[in-house]
Image (tube, rainbow, N blue to C red; front, top):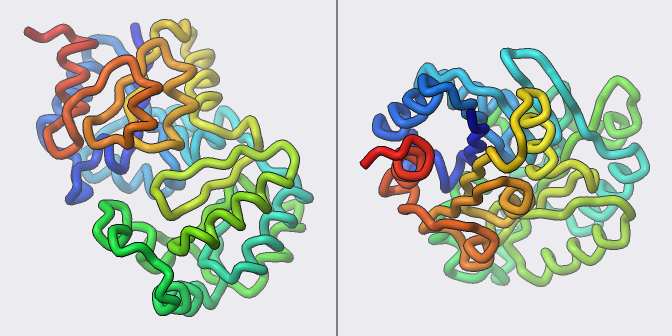
Length: 286
């Protein structure tokens, strides 16, 4: 039995943000063969569940870069930011005025003027032209309410409220210089994991909150040795799970830096790369 961890965007989902029938069938074949197929994504639990429901797929979930894990609808682990970490992250984001959100165990929250912040960024003239053509551009510049996030003017209060567990902070940084400033600011905060799932976003979690630990903890839950784990991904936030997995498989559309951490490169997400990898390297279909 193997544990197969699938990233969603750029990996299991094609460029049209769909899971093809070929990929759905490959996932089901792996499950029928006794393997555990989990989704391990930067997305929220709510977003992952909605995606799986479209295709009637039942999978364990590692959301928000593996900081929150669910099996059969039951929470098995959360890795949260400390209050002080969240406060300092919030301060840095406000100083730059970028669009951002905080993911908690009760949902995701974004500032009420998120759209205005994005408009200011887009009108700055400092955005590289190729960013507009990036496959992740639309996803990260879509208004957060489309994804079910709550707009609020009370983020500072939420961060300090013990009723909320802060899992992750994410922001859009289309201005490369601004992104560098934010990365430097976050680097000054102790015990943080700084990642990205595109050239123009930053995802910040506790140092133990990453896909590698999400994969490890899920493997422990099912009693599967790490050498029998498989990870498939395409972006830099997938590197920790590549480093943890027994077999790391990068999509052909992955960044070159990500491919360096993989054992194998499969076909692209628009060529059913996940289905190809499952059938060739796990099910051994000739």
